[in-house]
Length: 420
Image (cartoon, rainbow, N blue to C red; front, side, top):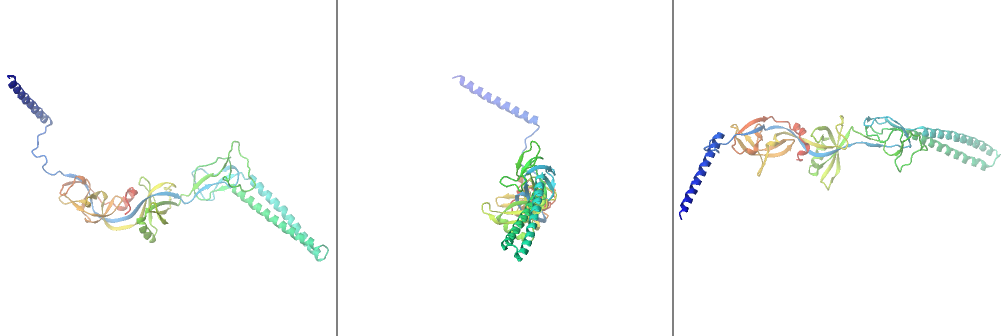
């Protein structure tokens, strides 16, 4: 058939045309971009930018990290012991108060009246006792003269004893009335920070529910609209000194006990933002391990002179067990973890790196303690290791000086490093 050769020639012509068009497009793109193809694009090894650090010897604290809570040594809920109206509030909520400082005054007039009544009753009964004692003396004389029956003199002895008992009862009532009058003046039982006020001036207050009001004066005048309340008037928490409670794993408890026997261990408290809040001393090691958590409870005491620690606050804790003296250190970022263990990249004089296996004995606050593998003064790669291999040429952008381990431990988030 005649149309087959024509079809084949047209197909070849179409393919040739397409190839020509593609070639023109490729040439145009190359010309516009200004690039020319390289003969060997993979030739040579690129220089890798890194930061470096010098391995140095220094003292490194041996630290156990924990999470703790701040606890006030004394936390007191101030409550009334007698019933009456609040006629004075003699402090400002939130202020520091001293032990013995008067805080509230309950209307003392009913209790002063009760005291006066008890004193009057005592005077009355003392007079009766004196009269009974005079009668007894006269009866005893008459009994010797056989002017009266012996029974009358003996009965008078019992009258005197009864009057003595009445006088003693009156004296006890006076002491109770005087105590109730003192209870009208409510003072701070401890020094500390006063909380929010739970009552208002003029409120009728009394002992908490279930506790009988002391004394006989159980009523007091109050302003119109006052309410009756029982319970806490204000709370006071002691801030100086203050406790921090925390727990450590039982695996380090033996170290804690041994080091504590040499002297009270240092404890540091940090905020959640890694700010140092204070330094204290370990004062209590609990007498048993919690079998559920496998931890031992500890307690440290802080002077808290600047009141940076607040009751109920969560803090990060560093318990300093001791100091590792003159150990070799590098930045923690310099130590990499491989399938065969830890390693670092050491920078040679020709700026080429060599992978060196090391043994890391501790890691504290951004500093790694190296026990084997490198020596002091060697320059190691601190950051940028992920593009490196043996023999890679590096361009050191910055060499950091050795940073004191104590400073890095204080600046780092304490809970970041596990106990070692």
